[in-house]
Image 1 (spheres, one colour):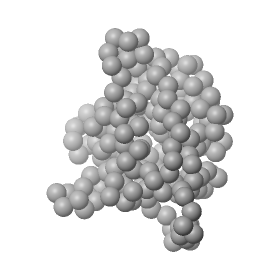
Image 2 (cartoon, rainbow, N blue to C red):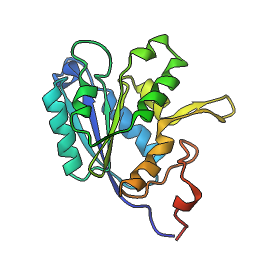
Image 3 (cartoon, rainbow, N blue to C red):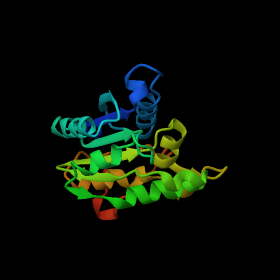
Length: 196
């Protein structure tokens, strides 16, 4: 059987305070840790820690797409506060919107806090890259990616990452293989690659 395709993933933590060194960034380590557990593919990370500035965020997303990142995940800047501009900066570089991702993230988070309706995460496609805004808290990042499981480990609510590999197939990216114990990717039978 051949090895999984290598993948380049952009991870962007958006925070005025973390980027200025006022406090330690927890977003990038959380994303690396979760993706490292969830994917069987060899991953090359392109990590960025930037302030909440629309033009800077948009430029960073374009840079990561142009660098060949099939998937770009952002964390932070998705609330209603004045400096929260990540969704606007993401939509500004979009070729297509993928509203289901944001809808599902809010559904998951609403199981924990009523303020989840204040989150404004979006997902978009630019060229052959999927860009997804994630929440800012490490616990929320894992919950939205992985979904909710009961005490026996049975999935109650699917996480958004279950749909990511097939989406990347459809836009011409590498074939992502997941560790089913973390997050089982869903593909139609016709899209499942036979073991080689």
